Image 1 (cartoon, rainbow, N blue to C red):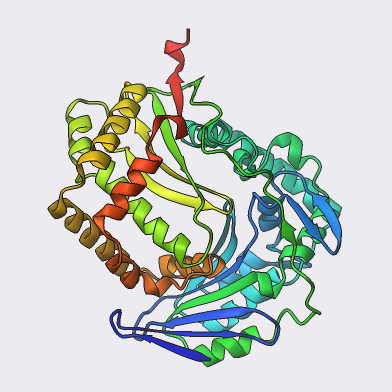
Image 2: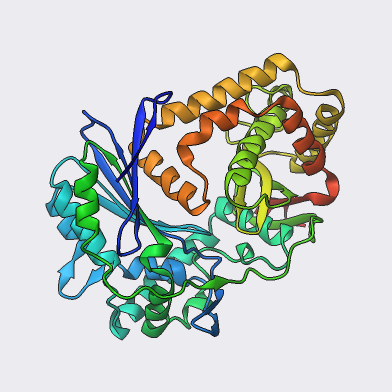
Length: 426
């Protein structure tokens, strides 16, 4: 395996691409009791339209999430029970752009890793089990639909974007999952669950060569071309629906506010913009910012308020949200403060403090092995080495953040989604 030392972080990363095409990252943590392994797939809820093997496909919304549920099925076996018997905790998640399966253990690591690789590489779907899962996922969809926090977040994406599939909930809808069949799942597993479209990341007190040897025994089929994804027409920066409201059973209005910004692409450019975007969120409305203190003292926000930057293939945005008696007043204050910062600048002392704090959080995060595993997977799919983040932070100046705010936090690129208490209906 390739050995990549990071002396400034006191870390050494081992990497390789196995003959079966699977990329492997191992970050040894000598002396750590816990070991974590993530087997992630570059496939999420937004990947519903694609061309594969010369044919255009459009799958029902929610297939990636449905597939994640069904991958724990092996003929005549209970995967979750097998992990538990080995003393491990196992789980999985589907996001807009990734599906990941993972476990954490303190013993029997080799057996757990083999089990992880076995069930993810072995699709087994029957008509009966797929139909049974439909009811379970339908219940999950209804639960999200009844959650104001989930609903306002989905409303924001629907307000910001006309075409991009991020408009659709990760689990799909009850109507869309009704069209999912075993054949649908086999087809998407064959297209996306290929080793070249996956990554295995392990963090803990483990032997990197042993990890590679175990992983090399799986995914032995012939490699196929990867799907070509289609996320629809390019999105204009203007938000198509600047304000949306809905009424739900909540005690206090809750909101999500988003500002569209151009997608930076993958690689180092994307990694750099993620840092600039997060620093911009901190400088504008983070807990140490003057605006946050002002809004908090006025009672316009509370401890539920949070802000940050995120991007997916084809889109990027700065967003914030939480509970507020007057979400539109919060939006107006954020727009005004962004204009002031873009014109007058961010205080040098504040910027240095924010940058030190952000870098410190990232450094401390390396001691959380599950978080590190996840970030290594995401960075691999983003084609940007994760452990290079100290150099990226060092190269960012406050002028970069000021320019980002001036171009991003403007009225025409803004959408506000609000959930109001039912008593305020009408």
